[in-house]
Every structure is written in C-alpha cells, then in structure tokens.
Image (cartoon, rainbow, N blue to C red):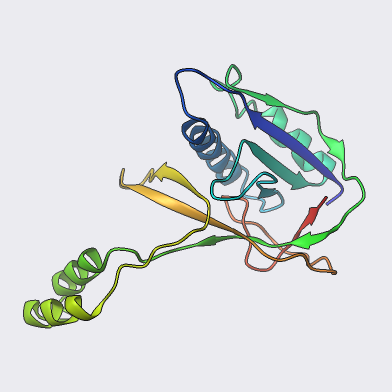
Length: 184
C-alpha cells in the first residue's frame, strides 16, 4: 500500500454527517463489490464514538486511481470533497480495521431459534430472563442491506497500532481480519 485518498463529508444544513457518511460508505461498498479485487482497505482517521467525517481509502496508486475513474461517488459530489490519490506519508504504525458483529437483541435471536426449531417457545422464555442485551461503544455506520432491505449497524473496530505490516485481502467493505493499513 503506497497510496491513500481522503474523502471528507461536508457540513450540510439538511443532512447529518452520519447520514452522509452512510450514503458514501454504501456507494463505496457497491463499488468495491463490483471490482472484486480485495485490494483497497478503508479507515476512519477521525473515529471516536462515531466514524467521523473522513473516509480514507488505502491501496496501491493504480488501484485507487482505477476506483476513482469509475465515478463511484456520483450523486454525492456536492456533499463531500476528495483529495487526489497521494503517496503515504511517514507511517506511525499499522492497524487492522475490522467489522464487529454485535448480537444485540436477545428477543430477536430467540425468536429466530424458535422459528428454526432449535428451541421451544418455553425454552426461549426461560433463556430470555437470563440474557442481557449487548451494547457496543464502537463507532458504527447505519446501512440498509441490499439483499433484504433490513437496516443494520455496521460496527467498526480500529486495532491498536502494530509495528509490522500484514498483507492480505480486504472485504467489499474495505475491512480485513488479517491485513493491515498504514496509520499516519
């Protein structure tokens, strides 16, 4: 990974930053899925309780320019600004950026288990009293599934800084459980 591109969501009186970031990220997801190469990673340099206003793409210069040439941000160019593809500056370390799936609704999980025939309705009621809803303090993006139309939260975890780069492939979200992105 020798290059990066920053895409900043601009302040807008009609739309919250989180809504614009979700729309931007959904378009990126579709564009990465269309490429089917797994050579572009993402990070959120301003992440804290939310992803922040900057989406950073990481990859080789040729891959980032190829993605940029597709015009994947069409329709959102009035709501964001993109840097050119730039060489990576001095690196502080390497990070993994991963998706974390939080199973947050005990009721939903138990209804599914009953529907699948794994447990009975009585077992579900008994288990519900013992289960607690899990909450996450990780930043997330609210997305809508293209396959079933359900809204879901895509939780994002940035690992601690690591000293070594780990090569690998990235998902259609730009995340990887194994590969790292440069942090600067």
